[in-house]
Structure formats: C-alpha cells, structure tokens
Length: 470
Image 1 (tube, helix red, strand yellow):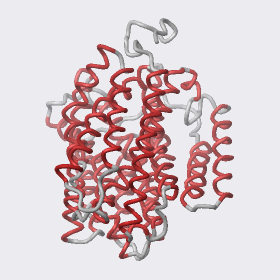
Image 2 (spheres, rainbow, N blue to C red):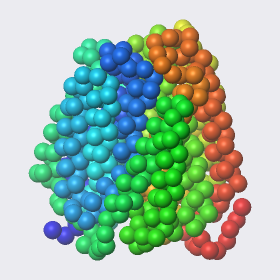
Image 3 (cartoon, rainbow, N blue to C red):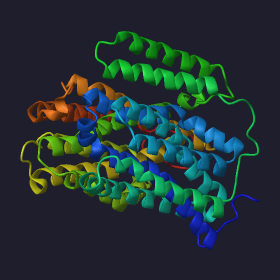
Image 4 (cartoon, helix red, strand yellow):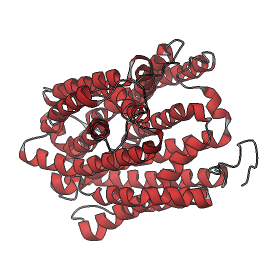
C-alpha cells in the first residue's frame, strides 16, 4: 500500500488520527494519573521516598533509554506492527502494576511499562507522517498534539477521581480498556508503513549502554552514598559516546548532529529545563496532598491551567518565534516559568488554591507556553532535513533524561528521604528547597539560551554556515 495517500478528512484518516491520539495519549494519561496516586500507593505498599522516586523513574529510565531504538524498529519492521506490540506490551505491564503486591514488584512492572512506551510513542507520530498526504500532515500533527494535550489535562482529574473512589490500583488498570480500543482501531483502520531504505545494523549495543548508564547514575543518585553504581554509570556513559562515535552510519545517536553549536546548546537547555520541571511535576501533587490538605481530585487539577494555556498559546508562540527568532521567546518564557516555581515555593500548610496555587501554575503555564514551541522548532531547524526525525527523538530522549536524573538527585539533596512523604513538616521544608533549586535551574537555562541561540536560526533563507547573528 502506497504511503502518504490518505486525506485527513476521509473516514480512514479520522480513524488513523484517533488511533495515534489514543496510543500516545495512553502514555501521557498514565504519567499524570500515577503522580496523583503516589501518596496512596506509598502508604499501602509501605514504600519510602526512594520507592516513590523509583515508581516514577523506572518508567522514565526504560523509556528514555529505548525510545530511539523503538523508532528504528518501527521504520525497519513496520510502524503499525511495532505500535501494536508496544500498546499490548504497555497494557500487560499496566496490569502487573495494578496487581503489584509490594513496591519492588511495582518498580519492575513500571520499567516494563517504559519498554512498551518506547515502542508505541515514536510510532504514533511516524504513522501520521507516513499515512497522510503531504498537505494534510501539518494539520494532522497539530490535531495529534492538541488532542494529546487534552489527554494530559484529563489525566489528573481522572486520576484523582479514581484514587478517591476506586483506589490507586485503577490508575494502572484503567489503561487496559484504552489499550484495547487502540488495538482494535489500529488493526482495522491503520495501514502498515516502513522505511524501505532502512539498511544496516541496529545499534543494540548503544541502546544497552545508554540504558545501563542511566540506570547506574539514577541508582547512585537515589540511594545516597552508593558510589559504585554512580561511577559505573558514568563509565558506561563514556563508553556509549565512544561506541556511537565509531558506529556511523549505524549509530543510535549520530554525533555529527552535535557539531552544530546551536543544536548542542538547545539540547543542554532542554536537559536542564526538563530536569527542573520533572522535580515540580513529581513533588507538587504530593505537597498539595500531604502538606496543604488537598484531596486527590483537587491536587490532580492543580496543573490544569498550565495545560489549558499550553493548548491555547503554544501555536501562537511558535508563530512569534518565526517572526522575531526563538531567542527572546525562549529566554523570557523560561524565566517566567522559573518565576512560577518561586511562587510554588510559598505553597505550604493550608495553602489557598485561588491565592497561592492558581497564580503559581498560571505563571508557570504562561512561561512554558512561550518557550516550548520555539525550542522544538530550533531543534528541527538546526539539523539537516534527513535527520529531522532523529533530531526530534534525541531531544525527546534528552528531555526525559533530564527529568529522570533530577527526580533521582533533588529529593535526597533537599532532605526528602525515608518516610518524609508521611511527615508534613519535613516534606514542606524539602519541597520549598526543591522549588528554589528548580527556579535556579530555569535561570541557568535562560542564560544559556540568551547567549547561544541565534536570532535568525529559524530563517529558512539562511544556511547554518551563513550568518551567525548574535
């Protein structure tokens, strides 16, 4: 079947969009639902703070380590096939999460969930690119992004309601009926596609080294004082860079991408920026429940204004960046988001949603809306067109890695260890310090952005070797 021949407005086009939105939404929904459930599953499974960190990070670890390999598998063996395998895998792992008898079992099941996510996440966008006629692709991608944002917005509400009415296990078991819908729609309506020019070997060694390096560093950061895994992780990371440098053209990450100074800089910005946001997303909903006395639904809805602002303003921020360049929208947006973190540091016992939580998440949402679209556009603009998909995947993996490492490192650094999530006073003090650290990270990201991102980087008339306006 010929690729790229389906119109978005056709019945099949609508079904394809539905399948890809449901598939990617599955992973988005899960992350927001699980965060709300953390205090409850922690108490029932008798977990400490490290256990809660691993509940988040086990998933992020395998997802970040394998997402590029997942995209390559889809290109080679069929995007629909790998998308289906990932969805079924994700559902089975979700069932294991929902049935977990202890925190160790849950952590292993979450790692398996991340493997499924690494297979289905890159496939959803690749299916859109391969299935629709060229003129319809931008609209399809926009609809996919917007509807995916709706899934993220609904996640906290749904998660809070499930935790209050049915229990935390349903935060995972909910994935099963959604996954069944994805499988049925995909089998019936989504055409198979693959990259017929995909040749060479899979970089399995690179994927294994990346995953093991992240695992060692994460373990060393979460389990304070465990130096051997941390050192081993760093050594494996160096080995990963060496392997990637010597495996061209079969490298998982073509290191030639990083010869462009702006591409390197924008990925450094992504790493630090998403590290800060990972800490906030991990701790805020727990702070609201443990310290401020919010119920699961109210805590889950706390970040809803951020999602709404992203849906309303991101496209406009992208247009502004095209007109004036990405430097100023990114710099100002990151600084404003950091200001939102400073405001979050004032959220404590008896916090008012209207006077403390709402202003903080609104300011954060305004800043994030201004920064994310220009950042993504800059990533794509600084890579050769034939590497656009790879560049996007690298940036996605960098963002998840930043969140992974920060969620591992920051809580122990600010004293959130042991049973801190059951001690409101201890958790409150640690949360305040964590928000201040996150705000500083955003400030560093803004400085790097201002001094390294060219104003004209999005101008299609200019080559990267041409003007270097600063």
